[in-house]
Length: 370
Length: 105
Ligand code: SF4
Image (cartoon, rainbow over all chains, first blue to last red; front, side, top):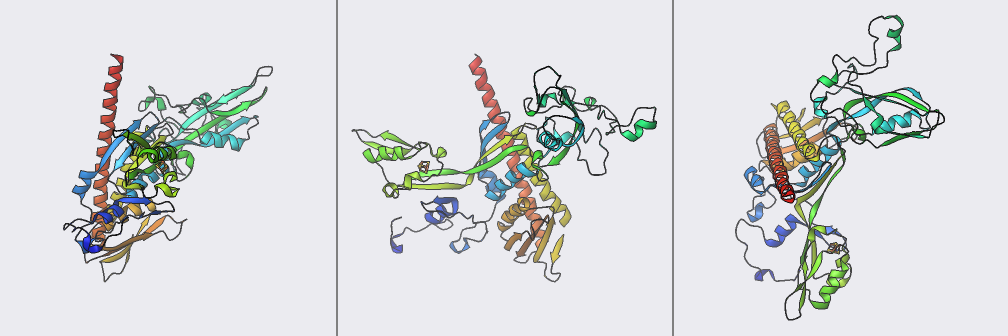
């Protein structure tokens, strides 16, 4: 920045921050060596000496907050969240990863496993399979609860590779949903009872009659996840019990493959870059952020065409040549949010649920205070 | 869940159990934006204990009241975020639906 005497600076209107402070407040400055002004000024009285109120007005927030959906697919979405503090954006990200419940296989009853994959490894693989069931329709199962239709989903896997046949690949679509619960009977009851033998679950009704499960049967989200391979004569027979859980207990319950955000990059040309230098600047950027504009009379000028693609690699300001011309910044309150769902719930539902969970947390504190 | 001096209600430390940075950092943000707050910060005493301590000092109002208002604010913000997000998704799908129809025509 050019050095000027303080007397030559223009007067700043009352109730407004001087432009350089405003810039420090709203942008991270990505310098060649390290970023500066990375902090967020949250304290309401931070600028009271210059007569600026930094407090949060709900009305102001409502006016400034915007969401723009960029991409929305079945399993992933990208959207811009504008006008929100990083603490909130981060809270949503953390909730998405660790505190949104899903269903995942927790208990595996193995009757027979002669495959090369050991029991515990097979169980672990089963646990990580995303299950296409809406977790909101189920309850948590605590230690002492009986496995019932409202807290457990039971799958059966029974595959056998016949002698003389080719080898088999066991895939996730061979997991069969048992809406009536476990079919394995408890040993103790099998000895004496004449009535229906007791099994590992106590379902009162078939899950098929509940909700919309008959129309949309419960199954793994992806049919082609390889679980094991069987050689001739080998067999797997097991039952897998899925329960509701949260990502903070084990990552298998995380509803997202990942969820992340980045701040919007801002690339600014501080001075005109012309002709050969413009060509050179365009070439330095590996992701083509800059472009050339003709200004007539054979003159050319560099412009910033695609700042969103900037990866902040700092290649353009690595050499001294363009250090004075290019400013790299990040907008502190503009988040490019990406959610990749594992398939149980669509990404837009996941985000709404995450916001609801933060609301619930606040509500809990409020009720405990009053 | 509240600790702190009995004589001076304007300064308190609140212990939130079963919570972590997710709520504490958001709360610190919304508390710091309240002009009645002179100091606010939080700490997690031990990483394997699920609790956070939120320290709050105010200009005079009871700290618990200020905390409650901040929670309320945070909740309203969340509600607004949810509403805006749902609307944006709806607009996006509607627009895309229209585009798809155009292609078929
Ligand atoms: S930082 Fe890297 S990606 Fe961004 S404009 Fe410079 S060269 Fe291009």
